[in-house]
Image 1 (cartoon, one colour):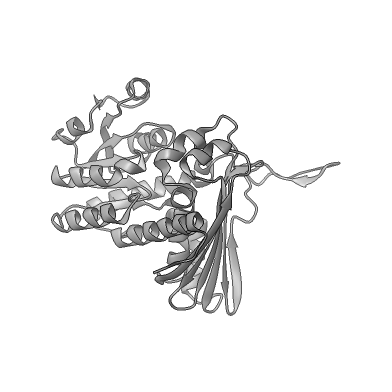
Image 2 (cartoon, rainbow, N blue to C red; image 1 turned 60 degrees about the vertical axis):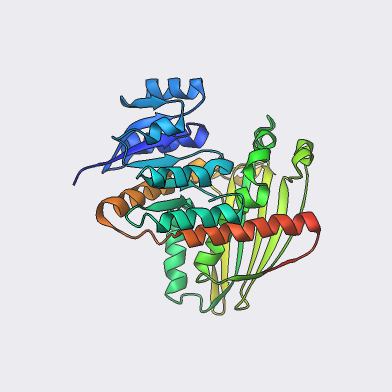
Length: 338
């Protein structure tokens, strides 16, 4: 079976990792083109990736007849229009989360996709492809903790004193939509995809005062009430001192399980006069490096053999819907009812 020929758009810090996976580590994938309006990023691609076509303009990438599928690692504000353009150009699409910053654009993508049923679209909720989260999902589904009724989950990034998150904030959709959308998707997945009924949220600026200019925060807490009585309590942070700290707990009627309670970089523990400790995962990529690879392999498997990924555009829309509601709840100081 012939390899899927990919063109990647976006070669920033995460885009470069995806490009390297597609170029070297995903059987059945071939990276044939890359696109970025940033000269330095195109120069990196030229020197670091196999020989491929380079474009500064996304429309030129879509016009490349050698490209079967596009891989989008671009600002969220561009996701919907770029997915729609790719579908109209006859390309399959993988796009990093979230699907969009507003529901109207999510609906436009779903409607456009319905016009091209032979093409596949996948949104990158990478934690579903992490071995530990997959094991947790399987155990919950098998009844290992009885009926699951609550998820407590967090996405906490190491503090960046250089202010990356402040510069990123105007196009990110805010802390909840950028970070908590992962936990929202996990909670729905682990609880059997219930529908949200009510959302509460609050937050603060602990360190990065520059976030006030776009009404964003660097620490926030949200609560989701689902229509079957299940609950999710979520925490997001940009200011961890010790490193990237993603963890999730699922509580059921007959037990509980947790993923990532100790965010260790490896299995080395140091015991000395200061106590017992381990190194922490520095960024989200080190924590989910294998999951990013499995995610790419899953998308290629979908395109080549029709293997379902378990992810749908409706899942991505619902995560976006709840993330937007959490932002609205924070801004208004009132619960958002669905």
